[in-house]
Amino acid sequence: MKKNVHFDVDGVLRDLNIPVCGGDPDTWDIDFKEDDSYKRTVDNDLSMLLTAPQTIYFPVICEYLRKCEIVNVITSQPLKWIPNTITWLNTNLGSNGVKKFNIKFVSHIKEKEQYISNNEVLVEDYPHFSKKMSRKIILIDKKYNQEAMNFLVRIKTPEELRKVLANV
Image (cartoon, rainbow, N blue to C red; front, side, top):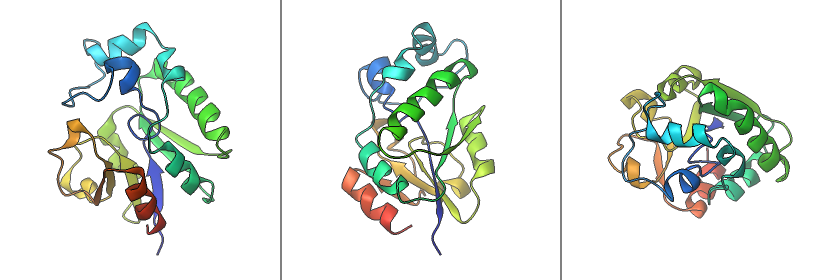
């Protein structure tokens, strides 16, 4: 049975780390609280959410999404980021032939666990899900998620992602 695939935004579709940090940070310490420097940097220039580049995985994901009946995006974003994130998705997915998608915004990353059922998987870069949820994760390899364990598969290249998506 084919699994329904959900996609995270930042780190999977959009590379927000480039304008915020100049590349991937070594560790994950983003919590989106008011004192979080990552959040503060974006809040001070919300245009980053519109101009951040696509990840290296984006073209492969779009190839896959163009064949899907249902396209599911699930992301944790502070409220003031949501309008620019929707615009980025419409612009970037739309210009790559993905015209319609469902998007679910959650208030905390771990809240995603409530929306991914047993016959679904999530393409994600976040390293701190529960053991049960990790088994539903196609993990995009990053410096900050090297300690992540028990995930479905770790993806290091766009070609690896293409092969995995062809078989889910």
